[in-house]
Length: 338
Image (cartoon, rainbow, N blue to C red):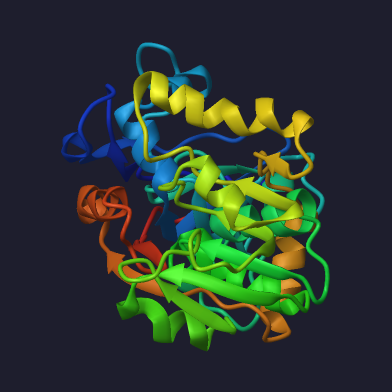
């Protein structure tokens, strides 16, 4: 294993307490060390999503079960990473220094990040490292939502609410790769993008109401949750499946009701109402890699930011109207290693 011998610090975006997104600052902190089954990645790019906003704000409060009750356990935001393997622990078998990789970690918005071996895969050959950083969390959320929770089949009709967003734009492409007929819900300004990704039709949420136009879907993949559950069920076939993948659109007690109502109601009706948990594995990252290299999946990068602009990137995502993925581009000269 290589050892670092100079410049033991790195630049990272840091927050010491839960609070507003603009509290984040770039600081010099120690380069992390790795355990036997871990990998040190020199970060070339990170990408952000709504979960990063929640972790910085500590809201809704339920996220603190995982991130720390009173203060964040991990002070550096960012779950999605792409870069070059810098060092490997003694038990790592699938990677070696110099490999170009992508995956998920805790603390991607830094010059270096520590990644567990099973949360990493070799970068798709057809993507740059900056493009690859856009894929892991959102791509896996789409894959797990459609393949596992939705069990989507060829020929089925699926409606994807939030089709232009980070998860939604991957879901459109994955659904088409499965042979489904895809209706995307987005703004008129994003319609051409969603159609270009393969959607069969697009509904402009400003002027069209998917719950009232009479269409019925086998699967609804809801990345926004801005409609009452009853409205979504009205657009679902009698034995259709509704997959909730947001939890946003409510706070406090209303958030808890929105979170658990589908799960409590589902056993008593013919429709299936689901939430799901998306967990990173190397096998599923490789599944995304295969789709990408086969030309069936590609990330849409809406905006690119520097490390110092992470608060701006999160603020954009927090509006709920971001297009595609927001990328943090890092230049990491870093220490020399031997």
